[in-house]
Length: 62
Image 1: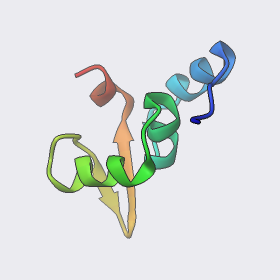
Image 2: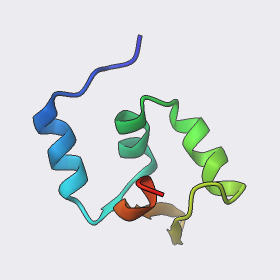
Image 3: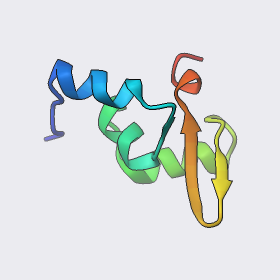
């Protein structure tokens, strides 16, 4: 079963300008591999700095 975030945890994550795939997975209750697939096929827009993905929080509202 997926971990449920408290409203405070959700607010803390959404206060960040950029989120990691792991943070997005927690927020959206997805497997982190699914987030990477969405990033790789362009369904979720992000930037890759080095070997790490970052997604602007505005992309989660799109």
